[in-house]
Image (cartoon, rainbow, N blue to C red; front, side, top):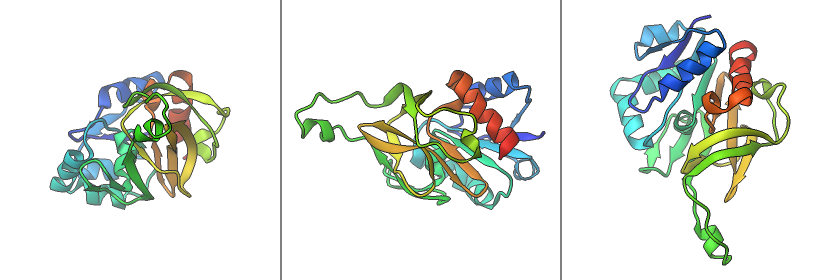
Length: 203
């Protein structure tokens, strides 16, 4: 199986490579259009700023390439956010695959109710629920996965797993050949490995 990891300035690729190696997959990291198009599966990871990441993608026409891909694509963390329509981070127009908006966590929800604010970013282990799609095959409701993020995608028709932190949000999305997970599957132990395996084998 030929697995490409998209190389760009927000890519958090090393831990993804290690996770795939544990599954017996030797992926390659590239920003070459033909190499990405010829892959059986494509992974689009990311950490960092949505605005600068989209500028980088546009400058190299990777935005057009990603939209055109026909094989299964998995966005991870920022990768999921960039697959959405728009992000409040830098008022950024994103790739528009998932019809939802990425918003910043707002602690005013707690302050207005005289409750103690929680920490932002949302960092650490949290549960996922309302699971659907082949990506979540074999997982139990309330499985724990690892998050690090300050922005989240709203729950929408394409949500295949949700989580709550300050408010409910999409932990995972799926539309056609595009999948996305807000959590770091590559750092989510056995559950994360099962999700990556599902993507590689069931998508």
